[in-house]
Image 1 (cartoon, rainbow, N blue to C red):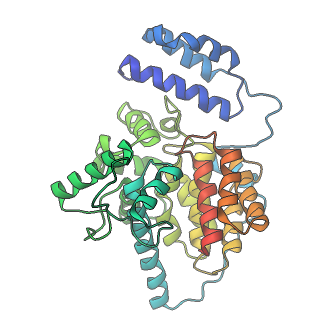
Image 2: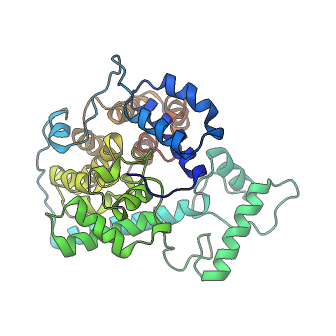
Image 3: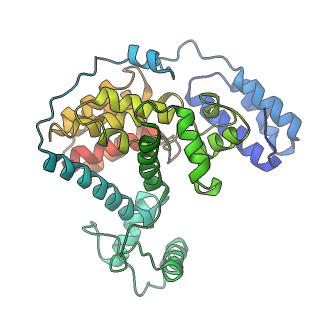
Length: 375
């Protein structure tokens, strides 16, 4: 089933699917050669190319084992996920959950002005403002130097226009509430899922909530593909795979928080809830990212030792997955290097090939931040 789509959008999906299949270990060399003429292909030819990609064989030397169904994921875990005793009063439990929510909002708001910018661009902004390294929210710049790059002028102008239009600021001195963001949308959406369906909700329940409460143009990449597939009558897990080359990107991982909040000390439950949510729109490492983060949040109710929390997260995902390998790499590099910049460099040397909103490189940066920032 293929919904109506502009031919240029279909071309982009085919391009992205080639990249995705290569990352998953499939042999697409012959198809990639045919795709060199993609600009002149009509819709029928593009559909044929996409179907050929779906039939591409897995390379026999691909060293990873990356299932997408829960029983197989559990079988591939390096160790059993055990419950951890939670010794908190009701007041302390509330404080941790509320602190997690506030921290999520604060972190999202901190990064919102620079979403999509590279580390180098962020450093340019801060150096012009005289605020590198950053110690607070991003500052406005009242007077840009003449040689300031165009992208920075455009970004600051856009932020200023949005502030004047909505009254909701994202720069220091302008912040008066949490700005709407899709990352925060999903935390609230998942609370709504639990309130209406309970802990036994299904992936389809999540999909129905999306259709009722989320506008199509306020979901992105894998979520938009899954949304489109829901509207066209598909059900999970097919919603995650049809014409969705973004199925291992960051979208599921940003939806993880609520499952950890409601399962303190029970990372297996947190990861199970995360799996059901993630399987609506993601596969393989896209699913693992949400399971990894939710299990870590669950464990964080029981200990402040960051390495132990990360190990619990690793125990929630297949040990021979690309994501697990990346996390183990960051753990090793953090022991080798005292300066986070050296670990950042190693991450981008090995994992910089992934799209900037892919699960694997983003999870690696999250782990780096936890280790060097002390949680």
